[in-house]
Length: 157
Image 1 (tube, rainbow, N blue to C red):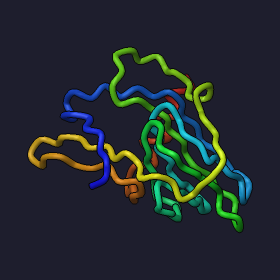
Image 2 (tube, rainbow, N blue to C red):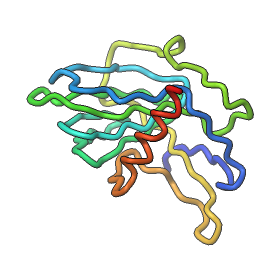
Image 3 (spheres, helix red, strand yellow):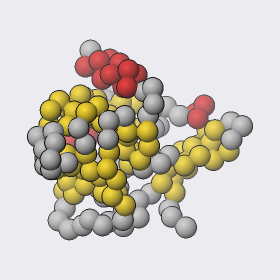
Image 4 (spheres, one colour):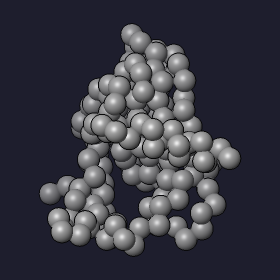
């Protein structure tokens, strides 16, 4: 069984955005990592293609798809070698009383080695009427692009 981190009921979550940005036309082959981050990250691909290693899994992220990983999860995120990409990057904490952002940059940890990496910690949330739901590493976000752009805009204000 893979390790998990229960976040508790959705009604008790206090999410706080630490960093939000639209990364435009990032060069083909650009690499983030291998590294760990001090918070959680959601990456949404607007155009192009990105590749993500989390644990032993490699995902190809296409427009409209997201990647999610939590704090201290070893990962490697890269723009596909054949095409540039535009993506939305959202760093956040699930439980923090203060709405003040804590930029993750100072606590990023880069390291040599991998992928593959050790199994990531999977986050679960209790959803009323459904029970425990695991947040996947990779998923399609059908109608969320507008909301993510709004989060980026509010973060920058």
